[in-house]
Image 1: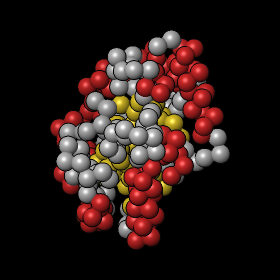
Image 2 (image 1 turned 60 degrees about the vertical axis):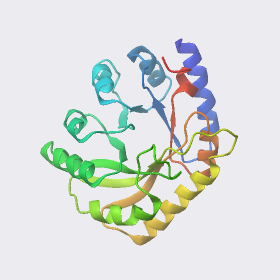
Image 3 (image 1 turned 90 degrees about the vertical axis):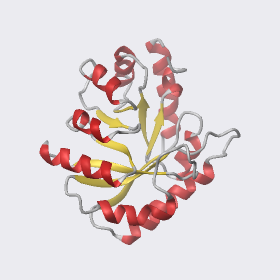
Length: 223
């Protein structure tokens, strides 16, 4: 997509974010570095990649001044070592083994890695994420890992076929974050709520999302 259309799309989203404590995360899966850098020139400060290999291939060509990198897709434990020194936030942690490996690699790299725990809010068998009823025990079990810092929650709700269909899931996520914050679990804060994508981010903003993850809404259909 040309830089002018990218600019118009980003400006539209920024206008929708006015008055809200929500930030735009540009999802750059399949997008070339030229398009990503065009988005960064338009004020995007958070870049989200789904696949480790693709992220590594593009990393050197992306402008990094004032930019945070997020890993938002499924992350295999054997790939953690490749991205631990490059990402600011990992959105999709949902197993003890993955949390443990991230902590181990982060400590070896001399850092504490910020993470989000993914919640399977729609109870879909085809998706990853921690079940709602297992969330508190899971957070308690990973809170002792000194190489990670839990910053909040993330979700990918079911694909919406009707407008506002996912609002109920976003409101449930917001309530979960409030409930967990009240438990005051060591090393677990709830200041980030990553939810809402190109088709439903308006509802996510209203429900209290702190990061909306927008790809096609910025760059058009995926390559």
